[in-house]
Image (tube, rainbow, N blue to C red; front, side, top):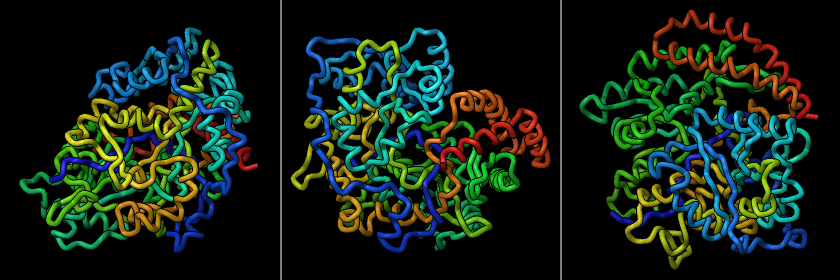
Length: 564
């Protein structure tokens, strides 16, 4: 089995926003023209005259120190012990000559820590913030500074991307028309969907099963997995998920545990009859041994161990199954020789089965999303805003992105004679994980998952993607993802940038803090059979008593304002 791994198989696990959308009727596009309808326009010209001067390295001659607050991702804690120990960031510090004093908090406490930091007045210079926090601490409290002028003057790579993907400039703005973070950019999104359902192909073939086309047929497949036990020794787990991705199941009934819209009317999922139907399905699967008994633990290490040879059906991006299989010694598909079992032979990215109304509604991934606005902002007490924006902007370059994701060229990877970025001999996923274990999801980098092997992203190359994808990737795993995972209805998302007023944003946050705590304390009790489903109406009544109708009205007002 070959040791060298193609970099494009190693996909960063991203924090995906789960609200908003831009499309469409959800039908599978039949040609390139219809495939691009309703998606972000790509500029046909690149006006280099409007770009500022390139940000050369190092950024400063004499070292300076900047304090940054970020979430401590579980993988960073597992592999490095802390953000400050990541060699990728040490290399970036050496390149820029800017020393970052890292502060972090666990993901489940991060929002609380950010709120306390801003309340105390003792602020970090840069901080990872959500769109809601940008509205509160930027628009309302002016503790985050607008970045528009800084990006215009010093954002060399930002302006390149704006030239070819002009929508990102507007999408990054808050309700007051100002930008408070440098976002991650996902250039492949106009021609690709990053996540969906996948099923264990080797079991389907072994058991002579056909791909399920409806949720009822999916249930029958899961029952067959349980009864036939293809993993052996009672080890089969018909269906398993990595944390929140379990709630992809509710898409069969057109709902999910959050806010969304139906024909312009805002809904809150847990109040609906459709949500109760999804809850009933999960309860049935749990009772009958079809759903992983340990799903509520959200233990990524346990999930990765199970996905190698025990799990039949799940949801996520390609890395959900590729990374554990690569770690277990499977060959990447592009490296395979005759008779070698590859990651592509094990799992198949399938068309989503449909629910009772003949559709699957996607909520956990949006169609054509080209930025991630959970990102890094600059606080009002930062003494080095120009240097900070240059530090962030260089991450939007190919070299900056590759450095923090895969290390310096020549150390862990290099281009082969065909132009593929490849791991060097002896380097594997474990080595890269210790160097930069998924921390790049926190930073404003280029999300260039699928094309690293043939198409390293630069703004000019993005212009070629819609045409080149057909020639390079037809009948490949990428092509299956593109065809199968777009066969959904994305129309129930709320827009990416909902235009709340600062007062509305603060009121929504206040209402939802208690409601979300109450919801998450209860939902697993109903899935796991600790409470009868007939009692879910009591949960609904309690949520209504906690002022959910007011929150729905505020969302409706913001949606109506956004559409004007």
